[in-house]
Length: 70
Image 1 (tube, one colour):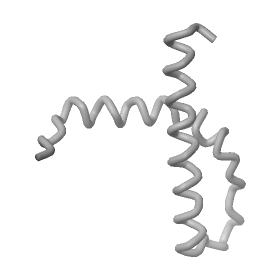
Image 2 (cartoon, one colour):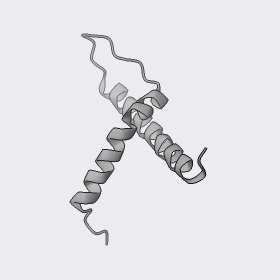
Image 3 (tube, helix red, strand yellow):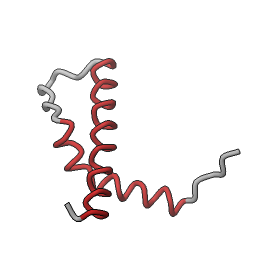
Image 4 (tube, one colour):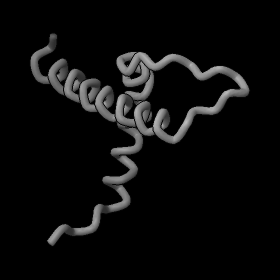
């Protein structure tokens, strides 16, 4: 059975996400929305999937740089 995640680990993960957010959003390459025209639920889900994928790539890139230096 999975053990509950500690508050310290949750905080660490959130801090990592926030630090990688600029790189993540750049990698995702999502255009800004038009003022006064909200996204549909499907568009939001698609954008969230793009951000998730970009976050995984950003995280792996940082790990690789930390391990190999390039």
